[in-house]
Length: 319
Image 1 (cartoon, rainbow, N blue to C red):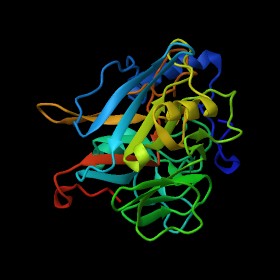
Image 2 (cartoon, rainbow, N blue to C red):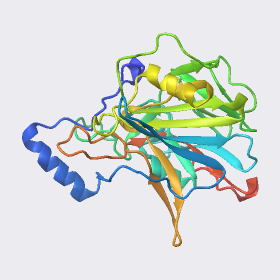
Image 3 (cartoon, helix red, strand yellow):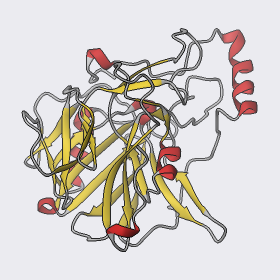
Image 4 (spheres, rainbow, N blue to C red):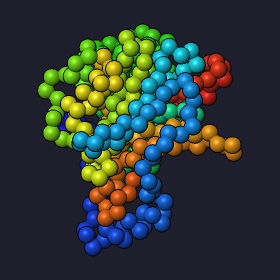
């Protein structure tokens, strides 16, 4: 995406294969379980009543996505960052490893989760080629990341959203991390400021998008995930269109998070036998293959939400 920082720009496809091999690659992916060809979600999962989930649909241009509205004043709400796994290289530049959003959500017992930061990644063995963004790849954030008051990533590219211990949220650049900060994730740019689109947003490039915004004078958090790169399903949004959509959803401020193949929203779906964590949007990875596959991209960090009776009953985030 053109809006990504140069140091963190990444290719939006899993890999390049000549046409003669593409069918074989697709079959291999299907057989090994690396790809998933599911029909787009049309019904919300069974959800807690403490947040609202709604379908986002437009006909001109064709758009599909999901909106989640979270009451930040709810005393049962806990917000945390989940990671793909432990630091793979100690004092080196890499902070964590990649894992699917649904896997991280399950490991942290989140009721709702979205992808977050732009990131850099590499294969553990330094070999080039093959499928990109695979589980276990080394990864590092392009911006600030904090959970439970502990800094996980210190790079200052982009713009963060910060939550304090009372879940009060703010969006904007930080010269100093304020005392009382509890959770931070970063996007590449603020797109809404004081209820208006930020100047000079991109109007040409449409991509899948993930955005987070603050509404109702700080009482409501709005999450928006928009599918893209499938003309018959959803074409995606430009940065300007995303800003306008967030304003229409009531946001006074909003932030663009990592998009493209990373854009994912996961909800916890209780069943009589056990819980399941469901990707409810249609991720765009796989769209360059001959078949319209939807593959959940692995990411380094997710922003998660869980609702608990009290603090002592909460499941602690996986470090």
